[in-house]
Image (cartoon, rainbow, N blue to C red; front, top):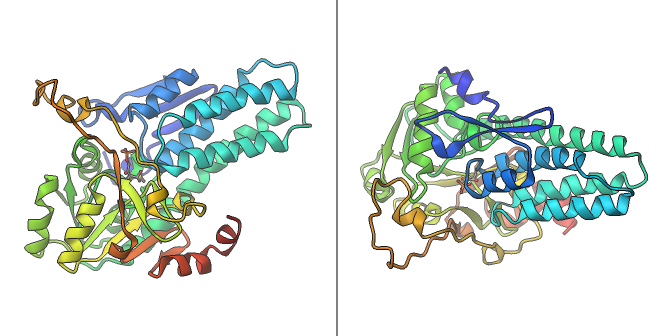
Length: 358
Ligand code: MRU
């Protein structure tokens, strides 16, 4: 597999009335694309993390609603909209933390409402266009984020990254891992330390797979090895993605991100969160207002083990995300540029309309 094959793979795509998505749960051992047509299959794909990564979920949701809307049988707009809203709320219930899901569902909803007095075929065509636009915008955003991210690194740097924010979590290149692919294109020598990302192992299963296939130099470490690689001077920056950013710059991302940021701050290593501006929830004041998804204990005790590694009666707490306090971040990299602290003030400068509209 070449660099281009990794960065340009169409992992979420539409094939007529079928939503095609790479089943990320099977990687790195099997490459299988799922063909989804029903709301239940789509809900399950998001919930089970077959499709995952905040931007990819948003793109998936756009196509999902365009496809599902075509199947709604209704006499008039009101009954169409009632069923459309039910399906949209159902998909939205699959995962709570990544704001891109609700944000893109709201965007599609806006298209439906704007076509209240249009014909059914015009409305459905407008949904198709919007879903494609969501996808195309993400492709452009990822490239810009990757360029800004790469500008923070110099030749020979080591970077530690967490979870997976690469091509399969987005449309192309990725966000937090996009700069690593660009470094390869531009001939900049960057070494990536990929942590496993317990419990679902997105780092081991997905990030180290994608980087290796693209020929980007990387080393896999366990989550609890971050401190030693930092102390040994192997790492000059921390790059991770984001699932929701609050107005004050607090960042919700995969569980373990905040711990990594705390360790990096101890060693004076800069920490950046990279993501599209659609991940900033301007209506959300602080990280305390971000809902944190809690998942099944079996993901800790059984998944990916040959046999269960804890007794069935052992209690588990399995939050899927944590919030990195804005005070731990050196910057937030978006497609419009790098936002530096103080974040609330600088968000207002870079996103004046969005900040004013909350
Ligand atoms: O639970 P996941 O695997 O969907 O969590 C994903 C992350 O935390 C990513 O860092 C984030 O969604 C950004 S993906 C570009």
